[in-house]
Image 1: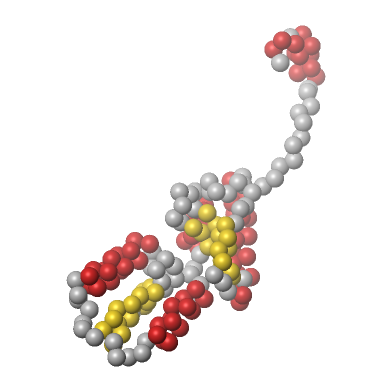
Image 2: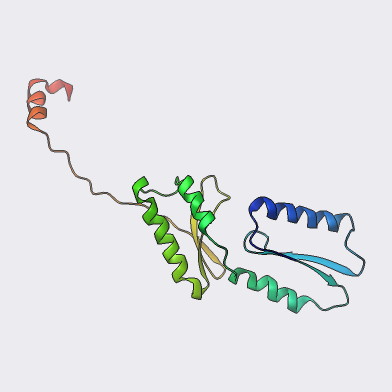
Amino acid sequence: MVVPDPDAGTRASYRRAIHAAKQHKLVPDAHDLRQSGRNTGDLIVRLYSAGQPYDTDWNRLRLNQGAIRATPPADYGALGQDPANLQVAPESMPRVLGLLHTIDAAGADRKCRVGVNLTTKSPKPFNKVGGARRSLYVFEEYDQIPHVLTADERRTKRLRPFNS
């Protein structure tokens, strides 16, 4: 059975059901129930016969799961809703999301993925290449421009030096 990229709640429900089936011995004798896609991607559940050598087939499914790319728009929407981990102005958010989409699209043939960690307090973007996952930090730098006093401010400062 394949459940295409379920949301977190649906994924958790399936995992609980699989665990309950194993614990309450609802899996037929001489069979084994296995799943892949614990946190991301498609959720794949298979029932294997104990006499059937499944390791090769199962490892192919399990190890290639990372190559299946989940669709990121829902993740990016979470960044738009709560941009606390992005240090950018609100008017720069469309450019940041476009940049993340561009990086994700460019890395598609290299098995590189840009996603959003939704398990933290605020969503946080990450880059995953192979098995390595690194956080992405997006911030804007601003030039520090000293304030130049206007004529009115200079006059007030000269008349009341103790107020400044």
